[in-house]
Image 1 (cartoon, rainbow over the protein chains, first blue to last red):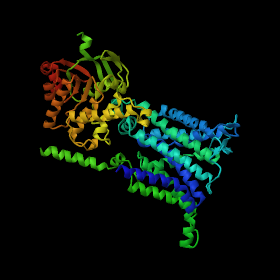
Image 2: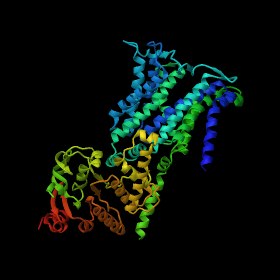
Image 3: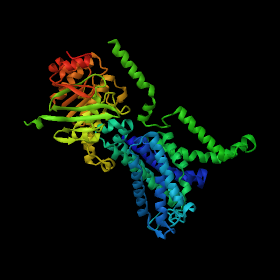
Image 4: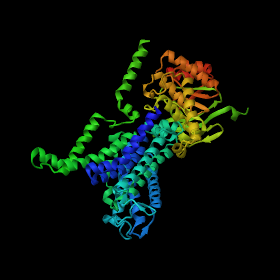
Length: 364
Length: 259
């Protein structure tokens, strides 16, 4: 059994390592780049999963932490201020600053629940974006709407992830290298998520989600535990943001719009709130499917109808919306829900149990 | 033993208002260590309000209370749980989608220490603590007499078992004072008898019990001392037999003038 499992892990590891080359060979270079983005989004979604999935706090401004991480990297590693700090300093610093922003957002919103929390976090996300947009006067910090360009590539020592290398006659491009770097970070985030989920802290998060009053009566310091959820989620967002900035080489406020927050939330909800596997699946699907529609919508129409009737771009969003509705209708707990969440959506069976109980009592 | 050693919980002139409504007015009472203390009164008398004050869910408007020699006026629920007051709820508030075992493990939160670092590294201390937590949770399930599979979700337990699981979860916090808000509500006769036996067992283990109950028979058969609330005021306190004969209590329950 154990052997069986470890050989399964080995197969998975080999598949993950070979994946960029397989994608490259089958679909071309562009899709490896999409895979890189998918990994960044998975990291983001896993961070949001801690806040929304485990602790049950609806956060609609999560992309702000991604922005904080990205701008930290951009400001400290670009000609903007002439600073070129190394990645192993800037990335953790970005994560730390994002974590600080997480606490900053969490602290005043601790008493809010549900819809009210959602509205405040939504506002927070927009505030960060608007700040980034306007911090070019009187002192130019963020370069405003033009964004920051010529950001240093991700590099450790002399090794840059932004260049191509020849290795044993094989050309390894920057998109491949980034894939491996992002994969390593994603695996780390998955590891941290799973360890936390199955621990004293994770149980406290779920207890707060289930019943905050009862949780505090059991001695859980709900303030600290909620702040911890915000801080952990924000940290993952900050790391992902730093990697994004180094990968793109360019950041501007429009990358951090409300739509992005909603996208990440969709990954969590669609994939399966509270389940790491589900969230990963949600991230992959929501990055890959729109791209697929973008590329396929035109040619398919050409083939079937002889001309392009609907603009591929609008069709893409249409199909995307349709897919979301279908999933919510048939799998309300997500495609791959955590066992707990799945049970939660079986609302009737607890009624059934109660009813049986009453009948049982009456017949005594 | 001095008086303060003997008294575990002492309320002094506690008052609580909701807008213009006075829920509690100048209530003073003291609960001795090792007793089962009953709190009765007609509906709306302020019993649950008093409970919520003592467990930190409400902040009191006037007066104060002393618990285990420490004075409290404003305090958070989790700090009172830390101090040793555990509670159950009138309308069962279990973590419905967690298993019976996990519910009790959450109750152990207070008496365990594993933080982020321990959770991530799963070092020897964290693993030992997790094992002890599971072990203690199993013991408590057995202690309160829940025999079903430990992985059963709390919401799928029978009503009587849910009530007992709440007690087990409260016991997991290692309380000095266990406060129970109408634990026998909705129970059938057999379940009530089992509950009575459980409460006696809990007292025998050295835990003081504060009990709100409507079932006067249960209160009279179980409690060492009883207080009666009516319209937010304490109208009687003493041994069950005295209280039962008190004219003010009879008037409050049956209405009309005291004889």
